[in-house]
Length: 530
Image 1: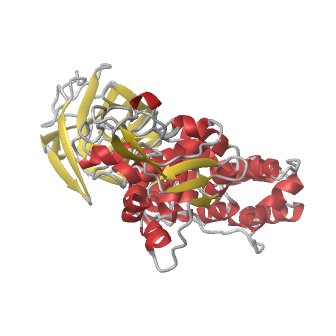
Image 2: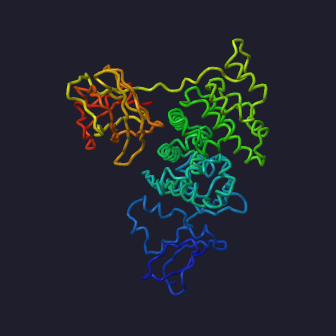
Image 3: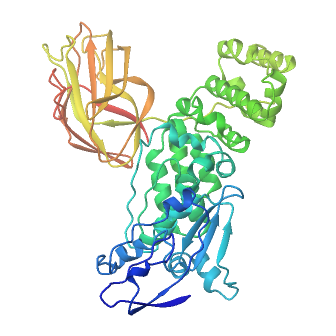
């Protein structure tokens, strides 16, 4: 420490992180206490330290406590502790202030002011990403949370989760994002601002859990829930279990169950750990065919062989699967699916293949080690929007015109298909193109056929895969039918319908050119999972 005299006519400056020296020309008659800070050779860390506090009387130019505190974020001025964050050889030195950290985290409170506080000036944290650490720090000096998403949530960056969080913390990922995670963590501790990115959110969640900062952890989980979709659901399921986040786990299961084929065929599925694989294979409500499950399991086995440095031979694939192979319900496939798929995969032994064929065909069925019961899957729900139906001699006619309606829900659901009216004059076949759009963008469409029996019942047509629909947003469903016969149509339509725990709201669509609206017309039912 040094006390020096400076002129009264010159205002004091807040020193930046590169040192506390003030030019000799300014030294005259006012006392300023400075602390010499030894700074290593400039690295990426030092380049990111706050060096912008150069203005005179900085306190007066930042009127709020939050602004003044935020100015201290990642700044050497008044820093009384330094964190050496990251693994040896790749660590970053981060300046901080004990009081700020202690009021933001009970872990830091105990570390610096508890009965066993050691008063060390440098704290080594090898297991937390520097970028995540800085996210958390920025919270402690403010009082609001703002999540800034810097890139597309559905982009491939979230697939950093292809590796478990422990792998993420250990592998090359941290070389690229190490400082960014600490920066976000510290920013949160100092200013309550959260700037989450898909590349760093998982490591930030790890840091928030480690240092017991629940508000930051909740923001990370919300970010992950917002980005959740079929292609990353299995990966996030694995990580939600690791982080013990039951709400995120439940959301992952909702997506995996309803969009099972998309989830199991994703790249992310091939990157989950063996325990998560077994948990998924035990799932009773997977809404897909067992042939799809078996193909996904083989792809996972190939990826696991690669991770273990093994050739992807039949023997090795069976070895890495272990007992997980016997969680696939092979006997629930059709005979044709088994013959064309699993029987020719070379993963099963000749005895297993022989016994399963006998199980399909013989009266005296052999005992199998594979589960025999079909998965329950999901039961589709139907929201019917008309109170009655009718037919007339000149309605409802189809000549390639569009029937369309808009809807919104108060809870997240998965639209699986539509229920449509059929012929009022006996059995008839219709070709139909169905489509689901949001703000003009097509989310799903399918060209198919259905046969009606002349009754006023509805007939289901399905999208190729269920489509996730978010709450409080209007979507447009359309159907373009082609058929010679007139059909039934709905009457006394309702603008709001309660279906189970989901409330649907309907409004007319400008896409409708065949007369369908809220009060009457086609598309009497939405078929969905919830």
